[in-house]
Amino acid sequence: MNYIDHEKKPFPFCPGCSHHVVVDAIGNALEKIQIDPKKVVLVSDIGCMGIVDRYFNIHTLHGLHGRSFTYACGIKLANPELTVFVMVGDGGCGIGGHHLINAARRNIGIKVVCFNNFNFGMTGGEHSVTTPIAGITNSTLSGSIEPPFDLCNLVLASNGSFVARKTAFDTDLSDVISEAFKHDGFSFVDILEICTAYYMPLNDFKKTNLMQMIENMKLSMGILRNNDIPEFSKKIRSTWPSKKQEQQAPQIIKKRFSSQLNEEYSVMIAGSAGQKIVSAASNLAKAGIASGLYASQQNDYPVTVQTGHSLSEIKLSKKRTFYPNTEHLDALIILSDDGLKVAKKHISKLSSESTLIISDKLEAIKTKAKIYQVNFSNTKLSITNLNIATTAISFLININKIIPAEAFKFILESISKEKIRDINIKAYEAGISLYSMCDGR
Ligand code: SF4
Image (cartoon, rainbow, N blue to C red; front, side):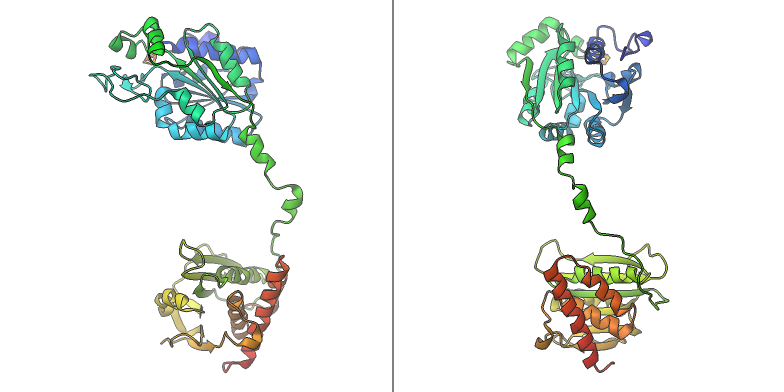
């Protein structure tokens, strides 16, 4: 099986460019391991090496500069059975360095072959993250003063489980690449080579100079690490929920009740963190769905926890709702000082048809809406901070009949945690008691 279409050759590289032999070495490595070509994916980065993907008889993808690692990781994560390899230059390793080190850190089983010729060849010979100190490029005409990355050390330090460095002149290059391809986890092969168009003429840089540079920079060569540690795309699947756990996932809410609501109805509940505002509002939305309505929910709270305001807005409608915001409020529930502070700017959304339910501990508010000042601290009704919002919603449902009270009770009874379910059922009953005591009945 030929993984490279040799009839299309020669490759469109400059004469003498090391890419010729490295691409052939990759083809030979694939032939050595004989993987089904339909299960091999080449992701080529931007650079001269990236223009030869059409010579391969395998799946190929060519994308943005430095992002080849991300595409390859995505493909591997979606289908761990594929052999996914990246052809990238030293330029792409600099641009996509963050992606490179994190793919290595996670041990995602992609294979990275780096064509490292110490400069950006395709764009005219500019310096890269591997240009040696004093290396002359078209962007460092007086010689680079930047310390270069040792890409192998970078990947080793990032947990790369297979790391090797070779030169394009090594006769066993395809053997090492095939070892990298056989490795289950992340693998990286740094191949030092010659760009005959730019780095070579600007630095009089031939094979002997490359070998001298390796010695001067004390670069370790050969296979530097080959550790057998669990590969990420397979490991993450072992953490996915089992079928049994999936069965415990939330079920679709079926219509069991009927609502008399003809117009869209918007409720805002404003209180403090810790008052279970969002959960209570969510249960109202679910009760609306169980009553055959569409529901949307929008929440607002600070990034901190257990401090500050908590606000939730529910929209119920017979028609599908696409936008949770509303210019009009049919009901506003205010349960604390924090809630009052954030709800003040929404009071103008209340009309004479609207309802304002407010704790009797809070300051009086001027509004056209019908006001219910409610004693939520009635000690006989077991109202606590944990169920005050559910109590207030139960009270609202009993006043305005927007949905059947049984629908709200049904949703509260389906809460899986017994302790929370009991607290909420007490709140539901407290809401009915408050309704029976209130003047507006
Ligand atoms: S510009 Fe350099 S890297 Fe690109 S094909 Fe020519 S010699 Fe090779």
